[in-house]
Image 1 (cartoon, rainbow, N blue to C red):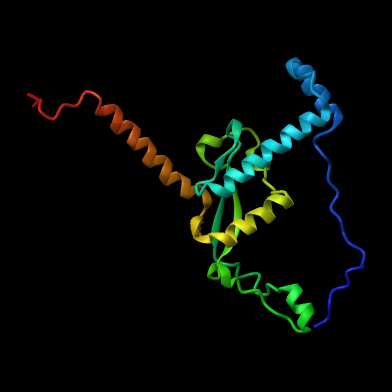
Image 2: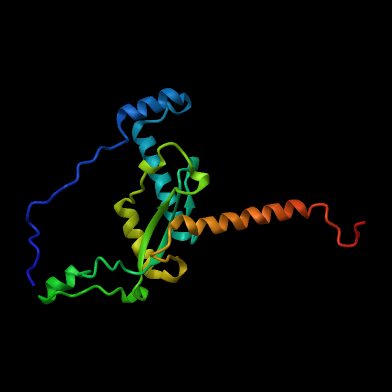
Length: 194
């Protein structure tokens, strides 16, 4: 096995940081009650809020619903992709000099993934198909550690099933429970009807 060249040139994706000084200035103009806070304080508050959401996704089996109906995110366990049959454990491969496949023995050959869904009727907003969710590196690493500790805690997802269908059945069930409770408010089992 040929070890990878760690000093080779890398391709780096270009990205634009959304938290710019112009955005913070526009935010302070729109919400003057926050104008007394420094830009660093506001950015730190946003980061702490995002860390709290990530922590809730990892600790809550059912995941998190984002504010303003932007969608829903959870951690699920699924079978490994059949397209990616060669899941090479590079650290062990370089150490041993042969290709070693990573078999996910710790999680019973299941792979943990962070899912995002905004398909349901509740999440209909303009240009929703353009939105995506990309987890930051600290979140993916923490999620990986959480999965290794207790992988049975997370929802098992069928790779051939649409994610929104998981929530559709729960939504219909919740709707029926609300209708039943509403109809049973005046119900008295001892009062016979005519």
